[in-house]
Length: 284
Length: 248
Image (cartoon, chains in turn green, red):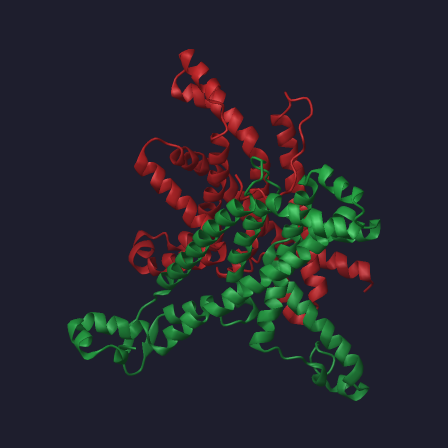
């Protein structure tokens, strides 16, 4: 990185500054900066899954036939009653095992099952080794499932907050039930849902810190590696335990994300409320 | 072993680890609650410096993940080990997860609870406080008999949710802190059992059941307290599990 600077700038900065610029732009640090992409991807993709699931579950809970309603309510309440980290670990493992089990019914022979000393998978051929990308998608989906339950709770409250007269008017115009739901109900619901959705987004962003638990080389893992006391045979002790400084950088990163999200949601909230006479409809 | 017997055995295996989660929450909640009262008053104070400091503290802890707070504070405490804790002879206490876990949890819950209480403080009717002042009550008297009863009634449902979230956050502690002498919590024990036989459905489901059951107990107990707080009201709505954690 230092080579990119023109000569006069390299002369202008002292040796100390040049050293630190070199340190913070070495390969390991660049890899650390690049690993933000995993976190951002998990956050954004997870939010999309959460929103889709939330809409689905909220609509199902508020107006489906009773078995659908029962399943939706069960999903919403059980997932919210369990720590996010538990479900975050459980879902990918369970999904992987389910796929392996299905696969095993096809490829395993009695001999290969007998030859396999491990408790799982049933035979070696049925083993599914996940790549980083697959783990990342799995992690995002499980974030989406967890926070989909929270989203559903917010949205189902917001759906109830839409004035009934609006829906009755739409019905009187001859719209079908699905048309009322999609053209009138869902579109008016956002105003009431937005404050709650912003809270769920903040929770989801903070849960992206858990990616390292699924063996994804995210910036938490890399911060740990970079910060750990660094000895080498040639250079001796390069630096002692600096982990807390690296974690502090991560904390500041998350605080910045929170700050930007707050501003963005406030702007969005102002925008969707243009021309709306309601004062503050918090649906949460 | 029959299906029921397997489940019962699992429930038995995870009973002691569940106690550890309960310990973490129970140790952090009272301390965090008392500190939060001061922090909320600090955020509402007229002193600019105190307001800014309280605001900054609350924003820092609410804006960042507890998981990384754990990492950061644990590694920070570790770097001070040789220079501070060891010479003082308190390293065995400070570095013990049964102390450090609740300590970091307290730092976190103080911020969330303070934000809830601060939101409730803003709803105290000015007229009531002014009337109390006109009666010649001192500031301490006003707080105790006018402000606080109002604040706690408004804040209680949100605080209930915060306590449940705090209890859920205890699941993260042993991903960071070392396990000493077989003191495992639910997540740790479930993970260990999983690595033995790869039965993800049994171990994690029973751990989830524990969390669910204890959450329900918290809701029930806090709901009783809420009923008591609102006993003067004719039909108080029961506390519901809702996303109030960020909404004050």
